[in-house]
Picture 1 (cartoon, rainbow, N blue to C red):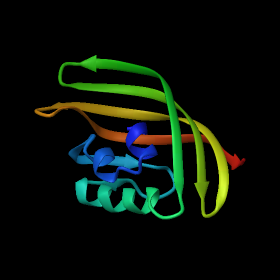
Picture 2: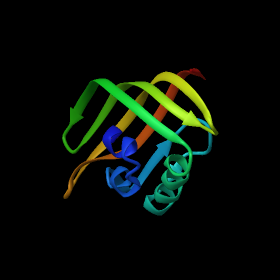
Picture 3: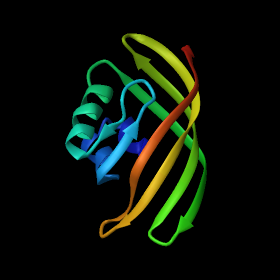
Picture 4: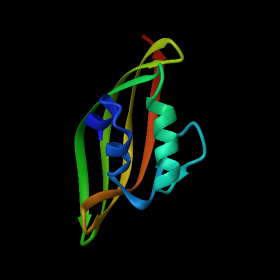
Length: 116
């Protein structure tokens, strides 16, 4: 996921979600479904905005074809021409599909996002 975001690979990032997947960035209503995710990711990682996430310390609890997880985020970003530094975590729900494990939902919980 972080690799796709770094490379501004919208299709690659969205392909990591189930067809009915949800992304909750915390600053807008949750984004549901592949078409809406593509539009949202194009807007988020396109243009002058740049997101450089460093993700670590993954904790995953498996339950057959579903799982829950958490991982921690150290973020460097340029948003609306301003450099920012942030930290927080993702709360994830995963589902096993024919294509492998995918995000059924991903929620971003930022603890801070300050000018760099």
